[in-house]
Image (tube, rainbow, N blue to C red; front, side, top):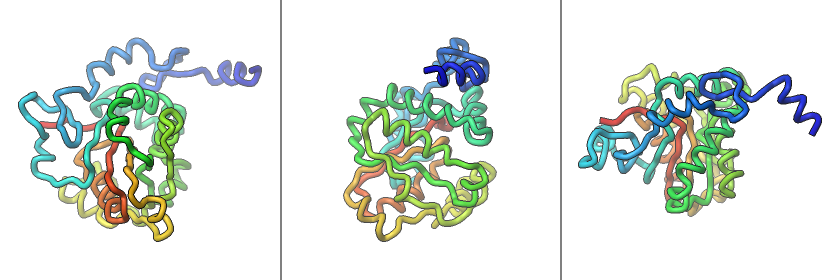
Length: 238
């Protein structure tokens, strides 16, 4: 108890979106902003991107793309202050933010998870060189926290990233597909743990879906029954 008190005294909790000290975690001001950025209905029935009209079923990307995942969803649009929070989480060692994201996933998508009924949670992996440089995989932190909250088994050793790739954000949609192609692998021994499982993939950002699709394609070909995904943030649909 004393060590926890001292820890909070010298490293007080901060709001993961504005960085101000906040005992409650997400501060009231950021909560108001996040409500406006929530990825809610109407949403694409496939990838979960917000779309303009409830008469649409799918966003532009999903109309023109055959995805390997069944369905997906995200918490917020990738705008301020969400994008700043994710940047701090990924590149400035703010690993504690992963707990907030996972708690929000469990709260917002608990019913969805019961419907999808995944038997495994897998983080989208980083290439080993990038993980060594960063020190951690941000998706694995969220996956671990969500597994703890949901009771679903987490396995971060099944899906591996075997090829380094250029940053996806700098590429056009078709270039992203070529860039990420063949980047993932499921080993022979890992296939036994994957066979017949319904997988929930966890990542930080969903944009065009190229990374998620390649990961899902690899998992499906290695024996997964179905693949779903949850992400912290997502791009806007059309």
